[in-house]
Every structure is written in structure tokens, then in C-alpha cells.
Amino acid sequence: MHTLGSGAEGSVYLAIHLPTKKQYALKEVYKRGKGEARNTPPREIQILSNLYHPHLIALVDWFESKNHWHLIFELAQGGELLQRIVQKGWYRERDAAVVSATIINALAFLHDHHIVHRDLKTANLLFKEDSFNSPLVIVDFGISKVVDSESQLLTTYRVGTQYYQPPEVVKKTPYLGPPFDMWNTGEIDLVYTLLCGFNPFYNASPLDIDERIKKGNFDFPSPAWDNISDLAKDFIRALMAYEPEKRLTAKQALDHAWISKHCPAAYMTWLKAMNAELEKLEKEEDPELARAHEKEFAEAVKSWKGFKEVRHLSRNSATLQNVISE
Image 1 (cartoon, rainbow, N blue to C red):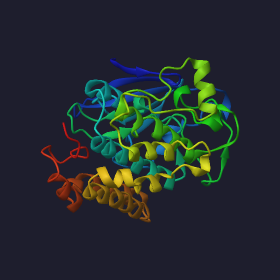
Image 2: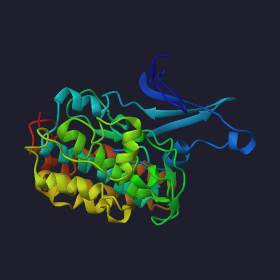
Image 3: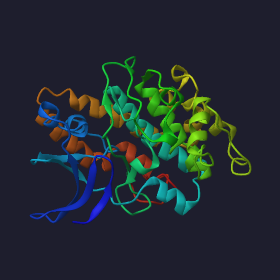
Image 4: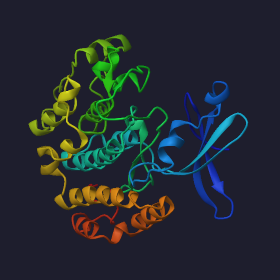
């Protein structure tokens, strides 16, 4: 089988559904532990089986064998966000605002469901297709977690990637889940890497990275940031505030002045209305009916009023990324 990727938990392969010839991503996760722990489905199954959002990777099905869990995902073959950044060099503020709003809106949906991702990085933001205006999805929920409330403190510190861990995790103090995600988003796709093309801790050694993160020490070096607005820098500082309780929540970030200035109002209306509609569908008494309605909603989304309004803002076709200019 063709390998799409591999990690600590297992490998991802290209799979084909023979009756339809449709391609999927098949993730094999090795069963660890003994007894009940060995037979407990991975978190991705627990979290994504009953969750649907156009900007979250969809779990289509799953099954188990003697030594593995097999997860079948929709195929996102358009490459990582990081690859697009490398190709473009950087994103203009308007383009970065659209990408940022798209991911933050998906985060708001997750946080409303008491789910924290804990490993947001450019490698886990994939485009579904190769086309420039392809939809963008969050992938890899392997270390995500369902929390009882937004105030629940977590104490698992070996999570995420070193470059993207917030100060409280590096210092190994109990931490809140949603602020962890917001630090990640401020550092990765949300403005910083998009606008300048590199990570705020790109030139530090592994030991230096920890020390700089512990102090919340990052800056906006010249000349890369000379022509980037103060509003964008304010947005990053608000997302990467040293004290977790002072960081913007996902919903607050969507209302920040930088997003309001650069992201088309029609697109913002569409994003927020989509979340509200999905929340409404989830309240259906019959889970199977709700799931069917969600799929119908996803198919009908291109003809929805918000999408029609967004269509006029760009020469690209009407997709979730059609407000990004080439």
C-alpha cells in the first residue's frame, strides 16, 4: 500500500473502496497495553465518530483486528498548510485572515463540544484538494481530549510538538485545554507563520526554545515584519498572552478587529451560521437522522445565501477558500 504518512501511533495509507473506486486515508493504530486498555478504541474514534464539521477531517468508518485499530478518513490530498506557505513565501494579511478565521471557527466548534486538540500545527492543517481554493481541515486528533468543562485542569505534559507548546505546559504546571489551542493557533497558521513564513522560535536550539517559551519570549524581527500591521501583531499577542486566562477564546478571536478588517463580512456570517446550524442539527432526538441532516447540510452549503455572497468577492469558484486571492 502507498504510505501517506507515519507517526508515533501508527501509519496512514492510501486506501480504495473497490465498489466505488473512491480513495480514502486508512490509519492503522497499534493496540497498546493489556486487557481493557488494549481494547479501548483510540481517542480519534471516540471523538470523531459523532462529530461533523466541514473544517474537521471526517472519520468515515473504523474496524479492529487482533493488533490494530483501522480508521478510515476522508482523503485530504492537497498538502499541508506549511507547503502552501513555502510555495507562496508568505500570505497577505487579507488571505491570512481568511485562513485564520476558518481554523478558529472550527476550534470554536470543538471547544463548544468540550474538545481540545492539543497538537495544532501547520502539519495538521491539510487542504482537501490540490486546487488553490481547496477547503482546509484540521487533522490528527490522536492526543485530543474531551474535558468536563473549560475550567478543567489537565496534567499531561508530553503532548503536542515542542515548538508549539505554551509556557504553562513547558513549565509542567496544570493547564487549561482551550488556551493551549489558542496559543497554538496564534503561533502557527494564525498570522505569525502565515505572514512572515517562519515560526517565532525558528532560530532557537531545542534547549533555548523551552527557555524562550517559558518566558513567553517572542518578537517581530525586521525586515520580515516591517510592513505588517500593528493590528496583526496585536492579534498575535492576544492569542499568545503569557497568562492563559488572558488569551482570547476562539469566539473572541473571531470578533477581533484584525479579523473584522481583513476577512469579508459575508464569509464571517457564513462561518458562524454554519456552526449554529450544525449545533441545531445535533439536537435532533434521533442521532442517525441528525447525521443524515448534517450530510445534507454539507451538500447544500454551496447554494446557501452566505456562499452566494462570498462568491462575488473573488474570481475563484465558490469553495470555503474562495475569498483568498491568488
